[in-house]
Image (cartoon, rainbow, N blue to C red; front, side):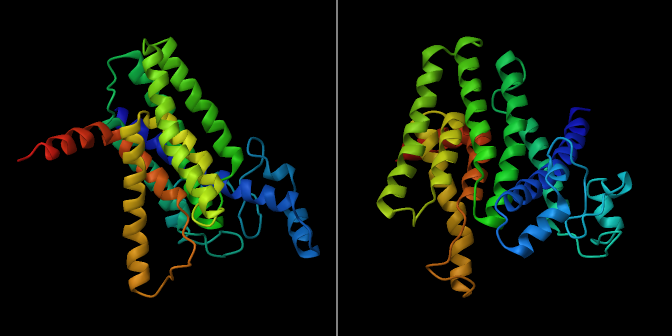
Length: 287
């Protein structure tokens, strides 16, 4: 029963992620429209129609307001064969993919939630975790498409992560130990990223990744998990970048957004970090 509810919630929030990403980008375009062509495009959409809370769902190509039958996650895309009902232009495969990934992440988080559901802390953290996953997906899609991690998503996540740490310490009995763990996580993750940013003058890593590392450091907590976060993210990045280099689809100077790898790593570390640390500890003690 819980899995069915989470699947439905994942579909709904995955659809929201797609709308959020497009609206955030269009709002930026609207705010910074300088050329006549950009101003014309921005005027067609309109600032009010781009509101995340009140704006109506619309086709990203023709801006026709969509009916309810056009908004059923995954099924509408399949029924329309990946094309807008009104202008017949292609609808990106991003839409059903994001919705499907959201479902899988919600269910996986429920099945492998490390804190369990027998305590208030476990339930409270899980609810917040679903919010984090939703925002993570929005950040990953935005970074993949436009090489940017928008502050309008990152800053609220920092606040939410701080609230989770404070609640864990003050309400659920974690005490100063929970606060110190989170502080160490931030120091190791964001501190290392900031050092790389300064040394490379922003060429190796963007400042958006530094701000994102604050969120992730607060979530994973502790120096071991923070280092594991960076290691897994680097591993994911290598698994993508090296084949691209071998096939000639990328060069050493080709920009590859690191945010999605960090976010994917955070999911792995939050769900399986303790098990990985125990396994690695046993491995080191082997004769």
